[in-house]
Image (cartoon, rainbow, N blue to C red; front, side):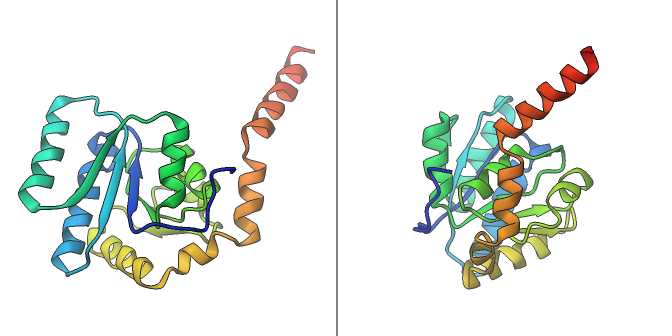
Length: 189
């Protein structure tokens, strides 16, 4: 949380493992649809491509559509946190996730999130006002919500809601580790 800042820069961010089930190609499509609506969006992407095929698709799509997307590669945590903390929004349309560390870290860094409402992610973050959920696969609605957030900043204001800070505090690594140790001690008695 020491990287958290209220001073946001003019870009959106996406980071995770860069494969289609995690939403990397959908992310580009969303940026392109925003551009077609006349909304200038600068985007930063971090993560590792596991397959060269998807890396080529990624760069070809950016080039062919003239998108303002900067690929940062796989960053160490300090660099990543610095970038995410300054972003206006995390666009996260993963279709394969559990407890999303990406969303949790984004919230801790003061960056709101728009995500697909897949059951695992929705069940964890549904009560967090700085996370907006869209039915999975509804790209048009996703674009509408990103556009709305870029214009209004409503989710950015929600990042300071007590429910967000309580959630982050409850799910910090120290608390998780402590609970695991307690559970382990109970099981080994």
